[in-house]
Image 1 (cartoon, one colour):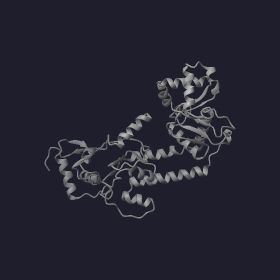
Image 2 (cartoon, rainbow, N blue to C red; image 1 turned 90 degrees about the vertical axis):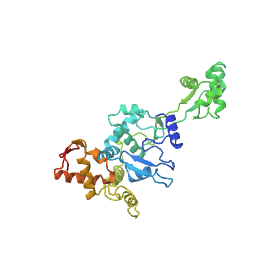
Image 3 (spheres, rainbow, N blue to C red; image 1 turned 135 degrees about the vertical axis):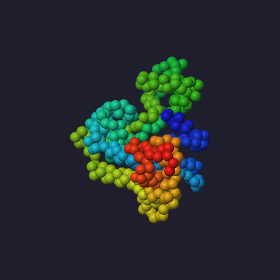
Image 4 (cartoon, rainbow, N blue to C red; image 1 turned 45 degrees about the vertical axis):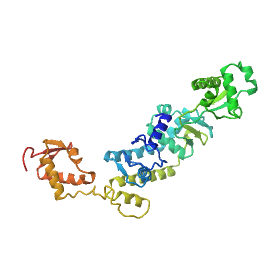
Length: 378
């Protein structure tokens, strides 16, 4: 989405013009929208801290709200795989650094303090490594103080007039649009001929009653004619080299620090996986993770019996009644399970296993139930 689309969508969300927002976890981490009734996760967050912050967007008005996670074993495996990508091998990180220097034409022995705009999509094409590993390698290079990289965001245009302002009338006729734009920039932006400062093409266009596209074309032309330095607004990330580029064989990543951060990240992920797969009250798990004491909440799925596989006589009768009155000989296990709330489904599965052992039904490997008494009365 464009920046304008994102801003408009978020405004609609804040103003309750839309009821549902689907987004990555980058959306609205700092928002304080009080009336969010449901936060739903479709994957495993990398840490309890992040999950708690994201789920905590619900119910800030102190009214009833829900945090739901739709997660299965494949998501757990995927999260573990994501951890591998988050911490590439040290030689892969070195490969990304060298490739970045080559891509940005950074010579050995120089460029400390220099800033570059990085066309990340083109950079991906020039390196034989997955995009996610490449991005995570850049983050590690930032943590190790080799580079400083801003996330992709909107940058305002900058310009500096390098020609002598007193000579402009000799360079162009006074009715030339290039001359008129240059003069208007000098009026609007004090000091633009001594340093690069932020400008607004729309402000220039409005003050001159010109289309903004025409102003941008004139600015690009003035750049080519070496009259100005023009850095148009960009949504591409920027990279600053914090140290001179060393010879390739001299490049190093602090292995001890690298392993330290990797171990911390792995422990955080393990705690998150335990949160989703464990048998302890969800809220109590979070409280204890933050080294606090508490009691089971009585409200989460665990407290409401989602891990309890002990079925009652009433459960048995309900399942048996469902099967004997079914209008099909073969039906999906999922279809049957969806007739019960989530916190009863392990009980229902245990009941079905019992019925299978008693040869009332047959459970197939592809998740089907065969009613062995189809058409008969029990």
